[in-house]
Length: 94
Image 1: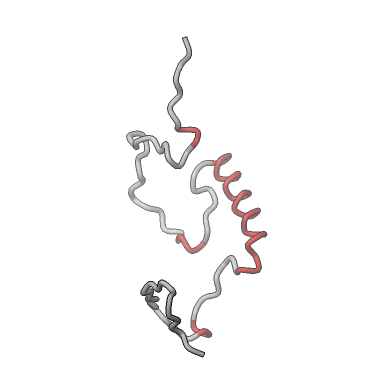
Image 2: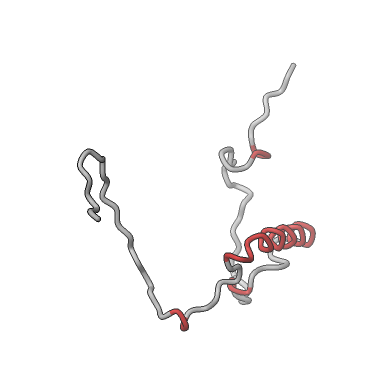
């Protein structure tokens, strides 16, 4: 079987493989491909708890437990029109 065929348009592509380790040495992902349905529900619950009790009340263990000495300030952040529907500007009707 030949890979090149006359008359087809081809594009050059590549793959970068970084941080390769043997399969047994890595950590297992928290949300494996089989658990994607469950992870969606879990993230919804985590978001609801953080919304009720404040940002950072619950977080994944991978984020660490050390308390940061600094915290991001969001009071001067520009609106996120392209990603947040609730931040779209509204035109007032007279």
